[in-house]
Length: 293
Image: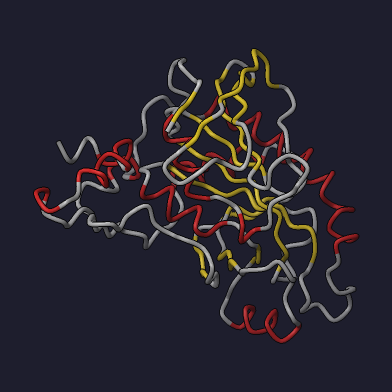
């Protein structure tokens, strides 16, 4: 694995979703091209300062939106951000609404996930090293609260909490599926929060999602079925709102973490050290070196 980044650790990262392929306002720009044991990330990582706060930005679909949700190299993305020092990761994600109260152009900071994906690797572990992280609360409560508070200072409506149902895609839901997910109590539906949240937990990152509603999915009888044209019509507005929220968030992020995310692996590694292949330890070094000497 290689990187041309040799600067100080960058503690805050942003994953840009559909419509957010770059971050406005970044100064002192530089790029990090990183290769990981899990392949190359979706794109070059852009590092800069946002109102004095150093931030790393990575568009998950690549610039130009060329990567399907199922094709996103999520392990490489999270691992690469870990390599440059990211401890807190904010994911911006376009979603459909499954509730009348969450209107298009509203923002949601969810606190739960239902994972309906089936084609995506969802762990860094295996190959002789077993880990079981706690995942009852999939998002960092501290970072999520800061994100929602920043959103409250904009003119948009921000919903605190809610369940993000992650579908495989790339097709949108059938009407029957959409109504089924409603019956489960899901609030929003999208295609990217998992396995990002699981992998961020394994990487001991704080992880929070800023979900930007573009439509009412397929359940809403009085609204047109979801289409790409409908979504694109709201993406530009949502991207501008997201960037405003991120700028308000950055100065609020404290230097020290008070949550448990930074010790997620402390009790998760279950394989006896002498049984773990050295190749596996080397591959996972940035994740486990503080626990396995």
